[in-house]
Every structure is written in structure tokens, then in C-alpha cells.
Amino acid sequence: MTRTARAIAALIALALLTAGCSSEKAVDLAGTVVDPPFTIASDTLTTEDGKPFTFAKDTTKPLTLVFFGYTNCPDICPTVLSSIASGLTKLSAKQRDEVQLFFVTSDPVRDTGPVLKSYLQRFDPSFSGLTGKIESIAKVGRSMGVFVDDGAKLPNGGYDPNSHTSYVIGIDETHKAPIFWGGDTAPIQFANDFKFLLTERPEHLKGGSSGG
View (cartoon, rainbow, N blue to C red):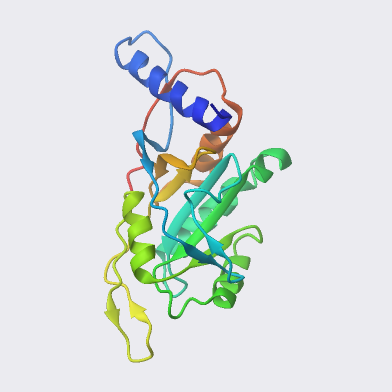
């Protein structure tokens, strides 16, 4: 079992323990634990550089973050991406290297590889974009508990998404998704959760919700 997977297992066990023992000291986790974890669809997406990619087998970091959105999003996407980027600055260099964020577009016609790359550079150079067929994007999203609406077709061939979720999904080294965060999670909350998942701090935890 990997470090992140062990951390999640410890989180669940300790959440159950503290739920029945009020004398135990509990440390709240901003993210919400998923038990059992989401099994991610194996549909192929496309990287910024045009290479095939699947979350079911191609994630390589101890902690992979996934956020669905689109570059023309006026408020939610910039806010969430900025919060994650700020949270990552609070990690050590070693911890930072163990986290990877993928931004999956819900507007693949307008969000080409170069557009995604340019957009994400504004937040963090390490952030990577993924595109693909909207049907595949929607299927991958559903497998993580994220609803992706292809919205209304625009005259220029793009989409005007009718709905938008702000969840950030966490994937461990087993390519499963055992935790997610709401879009209103603060940078320090992201940082603290990331540190726990990467270092398995021996603390009593209580699974929380970030309210997203």
C-alpha cells in the first residue's frame, strides 16, 4: 500500500474512532473522504502536447489533483486554481514535487493544448491541461463524482457550459480517488491536507467537508 493510500486508510479508521470517543483529540481535515474510493474511468484524454493520457494508469505522483473547468470561466476556475497554487507554496520542495495538478477542460473545442498551457502558466508552471472528446471528458468526470455539462453549442463551435462544479479530486498512487475538496477550500487548508497525505502524520483525524 502506498503512502497516500495508507494515509487515507488511517484517516478513515481514526475518523471512526473519534466518532465514538469524545475524549480523543480530533484534527479536522478540510477534504471529504470517499470510502470506497472512486474508480476512475479508463477513457483516454489528450495532454497539452497532444499525447494520450488516462487517469486510470498514467498518474505518477503520490498525490494527483484533478479540477474540471474551462479557460473562459470568469470566477470559479481562477479562484480555485489560485487557492491550490497558493497552498502548494506552503509545502517543502520535496512535498511540492510529489503533487501534480491536471486541469481538465469542459470546453475542448475552444481550449486547445496551447490555450490550456498559456492559461495554466498564470497560476503555476507545473499545472498541466487535458482535453479530449467531450463525451470522454464527461465520462471521466462522472467516475470521479463530477458532473460535466457540454452546454450549448456556440456559433464559433465552442460550448457555453450550463453548469459548473468546483470540486478538486485527489488521486493516489493506486489510480483511485479517495478524497475531494470543495471550491471554497482555503490555501492553508489545501496545504495542511496535502502535507498529511504526503507524510502520514500520526494524528487523530475526523473527515470533514469543505462545503463545496
